[in-house]
Length: 83
Image 1 (spheres, rainbow, N blue to C red):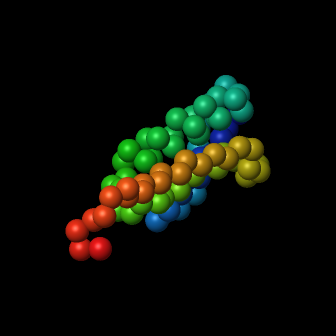
Image 2 (image 1 turned 180 degrees about the vertical axis):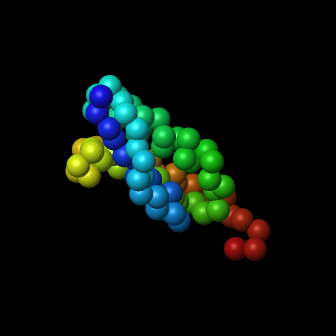
Image 3 (image 1 turned 45 degrees about the horizontal axis):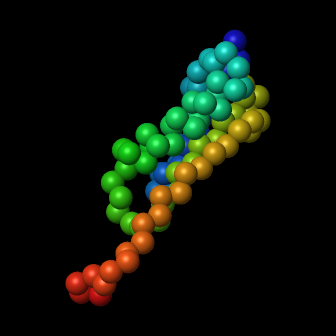
């Protein structure tokens, strides 16, 4: 079974996966990567109005085989007090 590593970046912290795990296929690794993005966003306090979450999938040789990102963008539509 193929072994994949998932490197993540939440805009503040970059983590390079040194353990990885086995998955049945590269398509399964893609699904895992995409599922990780909303989870990353959910677990991070929105301290600013723009943040990019990303994940990169590497194979056992360290070659990047897939990457994905999720942009969280907030925008005010009314004046805010104190601004």
